[in-house]
Length: 305
Image (tube, rainbow, N blue to C red; front, side):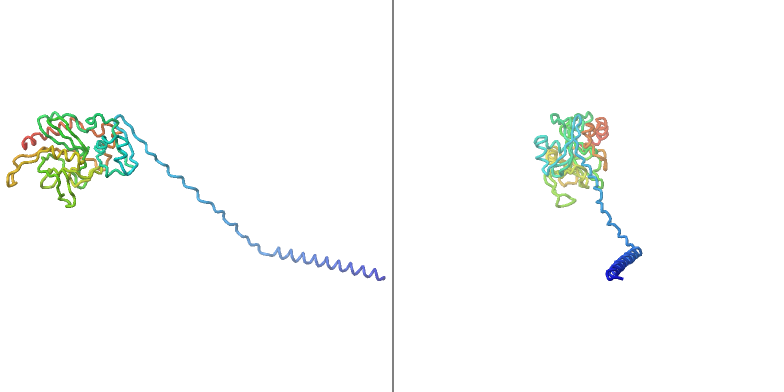
């Protein structure tokens, strides 16, 4: 064999060995992969943001306009100034009287009932203009617990009316016939000596039931007394006649002005005056009912007059 032929055989053998080595390496690599334990890595959960809650519906205030009244919503902390713009300064007190509330108790957001016209204030009264049954009674004051209002009748003719706040449910104002006893321009309350009661008119000297100026929150809130606006309390104070007693104070010689308190307030119900925009007669008393009530008390009134 020639030297070149031998050299070629060596080269061929080397190539074959290399190929065999590659084939063996590939085989073991494949076997290793096929025997390996597959580890499944869970995919990261997709974080979905919670669905956005729907916004609460905004309930906008809608004024109610009726044949005689409409409603307004106070938006500021100064109801007097706001009302002066809306109804005029001269009519603010009438709005307070209709709503049985004073300025200090009107927060922003409070809805008030307002008359469409202020030309005829007698038309806004819960009481009739005349009472035939009271024509022969020189002076008569009537307080309706249901309507939270008072009326002044001079010989059966209505001369003044206004809003009041009477006793709360736990201490209601008794419904009965009273007579004005004594009065004082400024009296310390028997309930709390820190309470100063201007334009005080006593009705029951034993229980301390009386009429006077005090805060009106727009609902019955007193300890049985009749709370009045300052202008009304002063006027009533000057109008009523007080009793006359003997020098020793033991005997009543003549009784004062009769004050007839009647009816019942609907605690827990919507106040009548708050319905006026929808029903202009919601806070109106029946003339026939008043005539009957006054007639039933006339004998007692005349006996003590």
